[in-house]
Image 1 (spheres, each protein chain N blue to C red):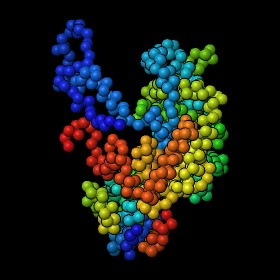
Image 2: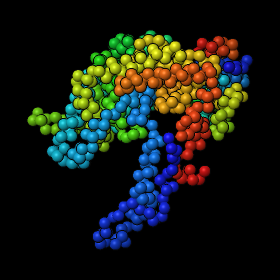
Image 3: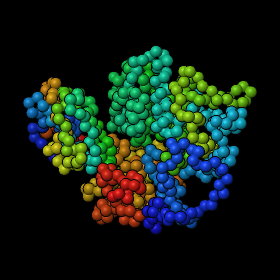
Image 4: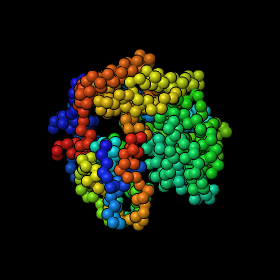
Length: 126
Length: 486
């Protein structure tokens, strides 16, 4: 399982890359492997509000549908429109292919998340 | 098996027909009809002979796999044998030829059966009264939640907007709650697979409408803390909803009402041997404890003191959830099933279903990973092969089972494990059938080590090989028109 240094990770297998006050959010390699071939990504719309630890969308694979849980609170500034036609990008490279970008209302929220090392240890127990 | 994938439209030959209609004695010209009622063009109907039709459907039915053709250990679905006497009785002219708008005095017999089935289901579950009107399990869930909501609203208790659902629940539970306008709150399971009471406790307050539970749960484990859970939920003013998907092992052994449940639905197509979804309409009767009877949906069948039956309604009911009295043909089959077993044999359903599941589990647990090694009820869950070093997945095992003539179990559910295989044999299978299945599962575990490629490319002996599920999900071909375009 691949992790990327410098990202923040949630227990529900989303990653966050912090760029100033903007959070770039995606799902981890562990998540895409567990899901199998992803066939659909349900994303919010730009300007939607998201709340930390609450659902902001869903990913569907041939096996199951899973909620996407937002690691941070804020306003959606951008969604990755490429995923609308090519959801399989999340399987190909889950760290390169982000899902949404969020203008954070409380950048301190990322401090509750795990770093790459802690997340790898967390996944090992799953 | 002979491969056959024709659509009847492909057999059509212009002018061919297998019927002859009597001479048209209708004297009025079609010109008298207003244009809005006339077809613009001929209906696209297949033109085929009687023999074309017979061969077409016989060939199609040969491609099918059902309980009548082989073992179908589909966890959480209770694919038990559907005795043919059910169909014979439901097909009797007196039951089949009735119309829901007939005067009530001309359908006293079927109303009596409706009432007697209500009483039989009440006796089996301990509930006080049932509505048999819902058309399916999920429809029953919605009905039950509407009753729950109505109970709170009628008491003026309008703050209760949340319903608690365990993380092991069937997907329909949160879906039904959402349709009913309730917010879903998840409660976690313990490592032993049952509801974590300590995780539940802090969720309970005056915003909770109730909890939805399946007992035994989707891991086939009995919720041993149920009495304490009932006390806690009732203590905060909520109600307990019982999802009857897993009622089979409890039939004749334990009653949900005694555990503290206020509302439940039953899947007649699971526990009471009526055909499943794809094979015909379903039925999801909802039973309630005595204090909720007035909220059962309309219309209701009422037995009068003189023995006559009437169809009635009341104002406090949780609305009307079906046009009439449910799928009567399905109710009839469940009624026949219960009468055929009788009070004495109904009691054997649960214990034998439980015995069969435990037998398979114990015979296979050295080859497959058993995450919770406990006595199960009617079903259990493996978490893939015990030895996963070759990378063989649950999907590969399920596909390979098809080569050996068995229907695959439920896979990748519940979501608590990554490689879940959920097996439910039901009480209607013989020891020989179970032994045959066990032998094949052991053989597949062996093949996974010796010849994993054989499994990765399975199935090999079915009419179609492994399907491209990803493309099927992304670019589904759903109609004849789609097919002819592509």
